[in-house]
Structure formats: structure tokens, C-alpha cells
Amino acid sequence: MSQAATSSGSSFFSLLTNEFTGLGNPVRAWFPMSLCGILCSLATSCGPRETPAPEVVRTDRPNIVLVLTDDQGWGDLSIHGNTNLHTPNIDGLAQGGARFDRFYVCPVCSPTRAELLTGRYHPRGGVYSTSAGGERLDLDEKTLAEHFRDAGYATAAYGKWHNGMQSPYHPNARGFEDFYGFCSGHWGDYFSPPLEHNGALVTGHGFLTDDFTDHALAFLEENRDRPFLLYLPFNTPHSPMQVPSADWDRFRDKELILRNRDPEREDPDHTRAALAMCENIDRNVGRVLKQLDSLGLAENTIVLYLSDNGPNGVRWNGGMRGRKGSTDEGGVRSPLFIRWEGHIPAGTRIAPIAGAIDLLPTLAALAGIPLRGGKPLDGHNLAPLLLGTDSSRDNRLLFSHWGKATSVRSQRFRLDAAGQLYDMENDPGQRTDVSDLYPDLRDSLLRAREMWEREVLAELPEIDERTFPLGDPGVEWTWMPARDGTGTGDIRRSNQYPNCSFFTGWTRTEDEIFWEVEVPAPGEFEVTLYCTCAAENTGCELELSFGGNALTFVVEEAHDPPLRGMENDRVPRIESYVKDFRPLKVGTLRLEAGRDTLRLRALQIPGKEAIDFQMFQFKRVAG
Image (tube, rainbow, N blue to C red):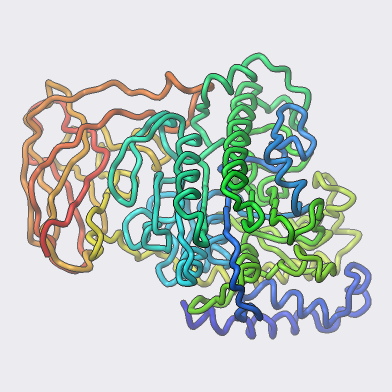
């Protein structure tokens, strides 16, 4: 994979040269630049390229605070004209620095996170799904946190990770020295739920967004005297739609003045809950900004704010077409605000299109951090635009991909996944196909998309042969959740969305739960099972095996709590409800190094069912 990535910049340039040669005047008619400029722009924005180290290494390196929200649409902010809510702290952040007019992320969560961490399109990093292993970022990718940690920065992440759980996919192994939150794609409870702190299971304190911010404030205090990178990936307004009563009460009966372009499809209560969650985010952003001020750090801290995809509901979004999961404008356009007092002029507006892939090279350049040891980047360094040293428009192409859909965005046009062309300056809602007016442009964008897919998607293997690592040396705990496992026969998930699900319906000894696992180093592991078991089902005998070793145990104690979560939901959820699973230490298992299948079998089921399974914890106790 790395060899292809290294050479693809030049090969892509050659392809583009062949495709665009001979188009002549029609090219100049739809782009205000020369043919040579088009070729150079497309070659650098479509294919990866070597990114040189910044020319000047700063001695007064700025701090970085990167706030990422989850499922917040471009339109979910009052600064963008939404009068249904009030977000004064985020609005003030935007007004105090730079606002990007057209900034693009991915249609869903984990791909965006991979792109902002690496500066590369997400398929290059092995990310193709949001669960069951497809959300993991390849281990040969170097992250933003690793670059900054290597430069002497203190690094931390508090919130939703969503790029792999088991080390070395875990955030602690990807450059973040401190991590508090959850690694899954979504969580089933937002009020004092089970979380992890650097791999250890802990219990959260209060509403998650408030809790993550509490940890961020403590980190700022602890690291006030050294440069730091703080990544704050909030988990809201992703469902389940849970929010404190103080926020919900402002919206419970609120009239929604602005509605979606298709109002009959909108669920007003879902919109109210999302906007209440966004106002909660705004209050927490205000807490971070206030802390920076109180510690005297504001002038030397770059603060960024963006979302990971379009809105998770049908609600007002500036009239754009598409929402979360779509490669249309509304599914991938995000706010991006960057404030650096004394360096980025307040009120700066950035007109050229940009994307999540640009964040790593831009932050590295602003901070004077050399990018060593990483792969060629797809992203551009936007520092000249932010600092006012370059105001030119780069007529690049940005590609949005999810599933089997790919759309292409130029400065003025969007080619959608169906091959229809839209003039986004005159038709920002994508209502009129202008392919007949610009046939040469449409054809060239179709060819560019074909080349991008041939180049970038080729880096994704047809079959994901990556296993789940268990027992990474130097790491005490490894978790094997239901999310990453497979149930056979009648065993089913508690919900079709795997991220926060558990296995249930285990009625036959012929069925099993398994994971494809690789143990990098042999060792003895203390195994803890998180499960529930009704009183009438106690006595079930289970076997956990890997390779030639097995651990047999009996679940003798009843623990059968009800499903919960609905008591805090403001609208019905689509994901699984949760249970309070009890930990049960079941013994010690020897694991030899190598690849094999980790299996959980039921040897005896004396009752109607065996257990409901949430996860295993493996604790290395000996080498």
C-alpha cells in the first residue's frame, strides 16, 4: 500500500494530462485559469503528494484545540442564519478568526476522523465502514497527534474516537498520551455511562459533553506551561437524542421558524432535541474559551471548530440537498472556524473550497512542525490563506466518497454520484442539472472521478484481512466487544447497528460467537466477561478458546437487569438500548502468538437461553 501511495502523485498527473489534452477553449470557458493551471491543480488535489517540512520551525509554538462535533449540520449554528437556536460562543469564535465558506468533510463519522488525522483520503487509510472493524485506521498511517507528540507537544483526546479500539488502533497508540471517552461509533447512554480512561474501564460523571469538557479544562490547566494538542471530539448531537433537562426545556415546545426544504419529512421533536444538544455544545465551547482566557493562553492557541458530516436528521440546513450519509452538498459541507488571536485577522472569510484532508498540513505549517515519516498527503496547506499572505483561489477538486457513491466538487460546480452536474454558485440547492449547458465540463469531471476511484479506492482491498489485535505488548487491557464479533445461528444482535449492541437469543449449543484475532506476543491473560443471565438460565457452561488453549467456566449467578436508556431519550432511538452488564472473572487463559479464531461456545444450556453477551476484557498478567 505504501509503495502505491508514494508513486501515485506522478501517475495521477500523467492520467490527467492525457484526459484533458485537446479540450481546448471549452476548458477555459468554465474555469478562469489556464490549461496548465488546471492540470497542476487537479494533480495536486486528487493524488497524494510529498509535503515538505515548514520553512520555519517556530520556537514559540502555538497550542492547538481541535473541537469536532458529531452529526451537527452546517445549518445547526446561529451564525449561519438559523434562528431556531442561539450559539453565541461558537459564533464569537468564528467572528474572532477565519470562517470557511465551503469546507467539506465526509458523509459519515469515522472517514472524516481518519482524514483530519492523516491529511489523506479515508480509503487510503483502510476506513470503509463505521463498525465491525471497517472504521479502523491502518497502522502504517501517521496521525496528527503523532506528529505533534514527536515535536514535544502534550497530546490528549476526550470524547468519541471511532478509528479503532484494540491497541495499536487505540488512541493511546496513535499519538494521544491521554484518552478519556469511548472508541465506538456511538454510545447508548449519555449520562454517567461506562467509559474508558487510557484503556481502563471507568464510570463517567454526568452528561457526556459536559464530562469531556471537564477533562479538557483539567488538561489545559495541567499543561499551561508547555505546548499542547487537545482533540475534543464531542459525541453530540448524534443519537440517542439525550440532553440535560435545562437544555431540553428551552426547546420542548419551541416553534421552529426555519424548516427543512421538505418540511413534510421533518420530525420537529427530533430537530428540537438536536438543536438543544447543539446549544449544550455551545455552552461547553464557551467553557473552553473562558479557560484559555483565564490561563492567559488565548493569544497563543489555535482553536478550530468543525463537524464530522451533515445533519443526522431532516432539518433546516440552508436549503442544501442531502444529509448525513449523502455525498451531496448537505451531507458533506461543514462549518470550519479557526481562531488564532494576533495572527489570523478577525472576520477573515475563506472563499476557496477546502476539506478535512487540509487540517494536518495546515496545522503543521502554522505550528512549524516538520512532517516526518508520514505518507504523501492529499491535503493542502491553507496557512497562506489564513495568514493573508495568499488570497488566490485554487481551483482544485475535492472528492466525497461513501459506499458506492462518489461526488466531485470544484470551486463552482458539483458532479453528484449519479453523474448530474450542478452550478453551486447559482443553484446551491442542487435542483437543476446543467449537464446540457456544460457537456465538456461534465465529461471531464466524470473522467476525473473515474481516475480518482481507480487510484484511491484501489488502496482498499476487496476483502479486509485485518484481524483484531489482542494483547499488544506494553498494554495492560484489551477489549473484545460484541460490536467486533460475529454470532452464528440464532444468536442475534440487540440492534442492526453494531456499535453499541450486545448479543442475545443464544438458545443452541451449536451456535457460537467468534472474532478473527492476532496475538502479537504470547502471555497469560486474566479474562473478565461482561454479561447478563436470567435466574432460570444460570448454570450454562461456556468455553472460550484460542488455538489449542481453552478456558471453561459456568455462569452461576443470576443478573438480569432491564433494558434502559429510554428514560433519558427525548425522542425514540433507532439504536440498541443498553443494560447494566455485570463483570464476571472467569479465569486465566494462555494465548500463544499468532493468528487464529477466538471462539465462545456454549457447552451446556440448561435453561431457555445462555447469556446476553456484551464484551470480554483481557488483562495481561504474565508474558
